[in-house]
Image (tube, rainbow, N blue to C red; front, top):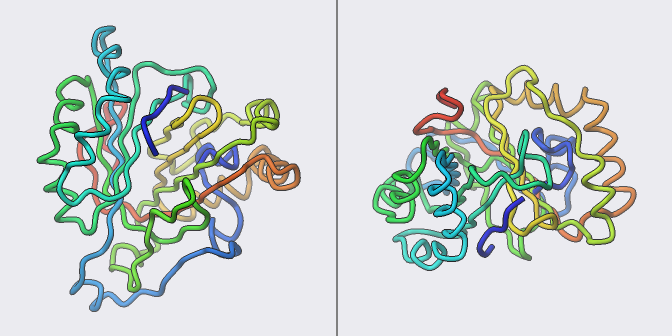
Length: 275
């Protein structure tokens, strides 16, 4: 995958569905999750994650996008309200491949609330330029439901003390993000074990992203609901075996698994709306 500027595909199968340990987070010592209180949540700001993916169609646009990996970081950091952020390249095929896909790039950002997220992206010259250069783009807005692990030694995603009504809905679309730093001694094991995700029922979006080529990998998938995600995570033999080997053989120096509820989306991917 192509290099990202700054700073999970941890379980390789997670190449999409996330971790199968008690819905991604419950048995992790740093796991976060919170009960719902809809009335209280509606009265306070809730942290938001945005993931904006861009597909660049022409050779000149792809070259421009590749050049943005080191150049966009500083102007992006000056966006009002911005928190943790990352820029990514992507992998070929389904995205879960060490060979780079020069046409797909993405920006991940955390914001203090949905209003700041919307205004920040609308005002961001980086997001605007990427949209203008791209042939297609989509932006997801999501609220953290559960998270375990660290990213660059940090805990960038915050589970709100009280979940919103959207987060508490069992039938709400689910975003699963996994990120891992792969040990260099385990690179061959990892990449040879990444299964094909295919098109399981309920899968709305799949992205295989990279921060640092080969070593720092991220997967992001969107599912129609939690049941669709679990059906893949628990019933896929390749997925279960990859998780077992990753844990048993210590493939990752650092990993993070997170689950989000999709609040809204803008744009399309593959010609279709995600939400």
